[in-house]
Structure formats: C-alpha cells, structure tokens
Image (cartoon, one colour):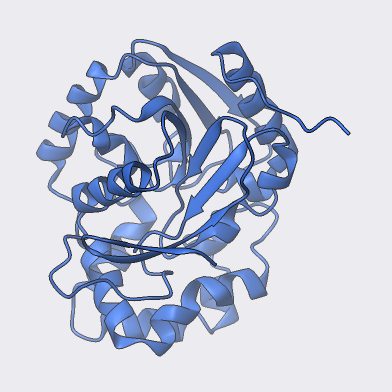
Length: 285
C-alpha cells in the first residue's frame, strides 16, 4: 500500500489510478479504507483515493505531538489532497463528518464538491451512542479496554454500538481489521484516544456549522432512513445549510450505507457527479 509522510505522520492510502475525476473517501472510527470496499468497484471511470486517516484504525502511529482533534484531522486530510497533487476532487464522507471542517480554515480550495453520506453533523460529534465510548477512551487504559470488549460477540454486535451501524452486519474479519492496529500498538491507542476525545463543545460545533454556509459548490447529502446514530432531521438540515445542497434518502440502511446499500449509493453518487460536471472516463478497448 502506498504511503505518504505528512506533517503529523505517515498516511497509508489506496489509489485506483486512471484519468477519471478524483474521488477522495473518508471513513469512520476506527475504520479504514475497507469501509468502501463494496462501492469503489462500482465507480468505473473514476479515480478513487482512500487514505487511512488516524482515527484509530491506522496501521502506523502519528507523531506524538500530532493534532488529532476533529479540526486537526480535517487539516491533515487537506494536506493529503494537496501533497498528492490531486487537483480539484470530490470529497466523500461516511460516518465521520469532520472533513467538512476544511472549509473553516480556507483549505477547501481543492474541493470541487462534497458527498456527505450519513455522517456526523452540527453538534452530533460524536454521535449519541458513541459519546459513552468517547468518555471511556478519555481515561487511562480506556482504549485498551474497548479493544478487549470488541472481542466479545455480544458487545461487538450491540445495536447501541457498532452492531447498530449496519442492518446487514459488519463481517467479523472486517471489524477485526479495523481494531487490529489499536489492539497491538500502544502508540495507535494514544492516537485513537486523541481523536475520540477531540470534539469541541456543542456551542463551538454549532458555530462551525454556520460557517459551512460559505461552501458554494455542489453538495450531495445521502441519509439513511433507519440510522441509529445520525438523526433523521440532520439530512435535510445539512442539505439546506449548503447553498448548492441536495438531499437523497436511502431506505433499508443504517449509518454504513456503503455496507448496506452499496449499489444504490454508487448509483446516486454517479448521477450526482455527472450532473455536476464530473463525467467518468471509461477505458475503451
């Protein structure tokens, strides 16, 4: 897997290559690029770039002084896009919503459009059921405790936690991969705790949300009707927040729409890209 050294540390990433418009995918805590494994093969004609961000599932630890707050990771994502020379990209987020905060620091010049798929928004950082997890991560040894609990099937599949993120169920081998780095590395657990506890207070989050109105490029909001983590009303609120926002709801899905409804998500994503000027470039044999 390719790797790039950024100001906060190394970032692994996948890159499908090709001459098509570039899509950059963000993932959740403590996930990685496999969150999109069902969707990317359906996006023929696009170059898909999938960084493994330092949200706890990253395989190499960050520098000890790295800023892994919500805003810090958003800046790191912007640095990643700039350093790879990807040009104007489409940013696609699911679960983690902090990539939107690129707008706050004026680091959104490389974004042609955004796709916000059932992600954190407004003051929902972290989402309701995950707030208890964040509190546990804030105590010494808390992340290690979480990794141990995730080995217990009843905890792993709890509908109030990760088990509630997908109606289909996240395969054990995928979830094992997500938690493996924090299980074996103390430094990764340190990074996990930094990010998990790195959201500001409610007032700050709502103030930041208001500033997102300055993003004047197309935004597609895709929301899940059976989501337990992201409030149903946040979908239309987000679409109204952005001057060029539009909303599509997908039924029979929870937060991880890429897991529950990958074909439908790929279809609405492709339609949005074509409608906003990002036509796929398909190989002609």
